[in-house]
Length: 324
Ligand SMILES: O=CC(=O)O
Image (cartoon, rainbow, N blue to C red):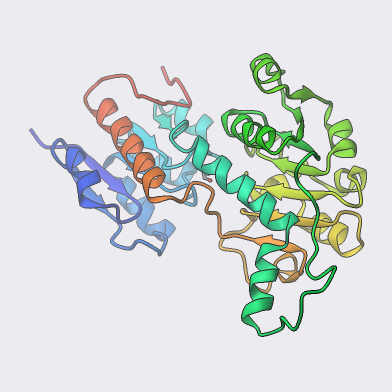
């Protein structure tokens, strides 16, 4: 019997791929740091029973309709806004993501970004390396305190709750906004629910961790930034398109908010000349929320195991849709 074909859109370690190679004919895009061009992806999809894409690979109508044999698309990421899930569901294709395995790692990065932005760590490190440090001075590179302040978390899923836990360790007052109330976070973490507009007005740190959906696209617009305190620090570790980047730029330039820490951008990789990136009060990172060796390997393994399960006729481990 011929083995089903699997296409992986980046070069992954052989030992991670080995269990899949035992049951399938696996082809990998041979580069680790260059994305597969869309025309190649469409071509590969034609023979594939399974795709293992990165969160940066668009899996829309074009790829899905080419994939006559496709049974499963196992994204390597918790977010799956790069995949047209309704179109996959209509075609009977299972879509999977990689939740849970990245929760603590992404929460660590989010909190590190918050600290780095509030305490101006990147600016300070560059200041020293550029030979600008002439003396200890009272307000040299002074930032804002984090401890005992109010954090407002928008998107209280697993990562939001893990950030809340870290914030509690800093004696912060934790507010949250979510589509649905989270009684367990309220009981266990003392997180307090606030309507979106109230959270923006009351928080010293506004942390965006909501998935990108049609409802959350450009949620952080001009009006949202105007509601924030002038001393507010905005952190985005979710998706760039949840933010109106022009509105954020203007809010930062006009002093409507104090600073921003951004791990994600509407267009990635972001141009280093992007106006937001050039601002001194912006800490910009290249979408590294889950980027530790341990977690990235766990994400790869989970995506792989989702594919193995579907190809072997078992239920997927972490599906996001239920095609009939
Ligand atoms: O952004 C990364 C992810 O969704 O896992």
